[in-house]
Amino acid sequence: MSSALLEIQDLTVSFQTSQGVRRAVEQVSLYIEEGETLGLVGESGCGKSVTALSVLGLVDRSTGLIESGRILFKGKNLLDLNTEALRRLRGNAISMVFQEPMTSLNPVLPVGRQIAEPLMTHQGLSKIEAYASAMTWLERVKIPMARKRMQEYPHQLSGGMRQRVMIAMAMVCSPSLLMADEPTTALDVSTQAQILHLIEKLKADLKMSVLFITHDLGIVAQTAKRVVVMYAGQVVEAASVTDIFDRPAHPYTRGLLRSIPRMQPPTDVPKKRLQEIKGTLPSLDIIIPGCRFADRCPEVFEPCRQKKPDLSPVQAGQQARCWLYADGSGKP
Ligand SMILES: Nc1ncnc2c1ncn2[C@@H]1O[C@H](COP(=O)(O)OP(=O)(O)O)[C@@H](O)[C@H]1O
Ligand SMILES: [Mg+2]
Image 1 (cartoon, helix red, strand yellow):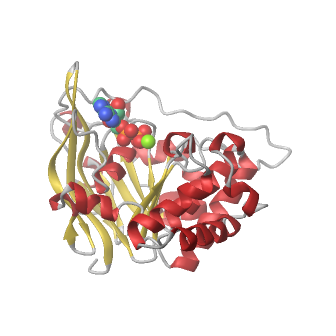
Image 2 (cartoon, protein in one colour):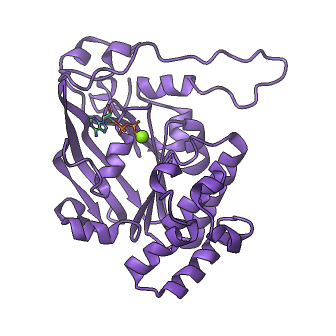
């Protein structure tokens, strides 16, 4: 693991809410190696975005608190950095792309200027140089008529094109790490495929690492080789994509896999009904003594409601936070 570009260790993040303290992320650990794409997957509300936002120091400071943990980037703990040092990092060595470009793009600035901006602030390029580079980037992310588009405002572009602009903005400074937080969730299927392809191509060209966040295991299969599965604020399984699909260990992961609709069912077989995991996410406002998945788990047994399970090895490269594997045998 010494080659890890980013290593999150035991990250715990909570929010002060009107109902009390909500623990959104609990003891999350994961790592991303140089040049690797790691998939981070789980249902909405399980803590994926808060984990990524913590890396860039973007957790809401008025209500959010990083209780504990370390976030090592190139060996340095980002949680020790001050606001100014974090600002230098964002959009430069580490950048982020979000689901909804309209929340990150400035509606009153032409897109060319927005792409040029990080080059001027982070890399000291002159306005002329930065604008020239921005235009090259518009071409690189396959926006036709780049020169004309430079002058346009976000609302004049389609959703797919706005997402391409966001990607260009994220890439201009050649980051070592891109965190893509559900970048294609708001897009139609064919635009989604184009954007995934674009990210894949840029990743190879720039030799960067990618944290690919999605609630969709199908997308993880297309983008990542290794995946971390989160449930209710915790990592419940980490494995290679092959193992996740062939031999998922955690009952939650198994449920998640059963809920994926088959992409192309044979024509003579009626489409199987999407099988949902019964029950709902537990409230994060209450401290749960045992496993957070116990109430929904088809395999629940005595220890599950009494004590929190740790991440246990299932086999080489695969771990699950589940009492089924806690004896170290790797067998349920
Ligand atoms: N600013 C905030 N204040 C209070 N709760 C928050 C805040 N941001 C996130 N949360 C809570 O943290 C949990 C995880 O959220 P999030 O990381 O956005 O989930 P995901 O990205 O997996 O959908 C959720 O329960 C969410 O309501
Ligand atoms: Mg999210």
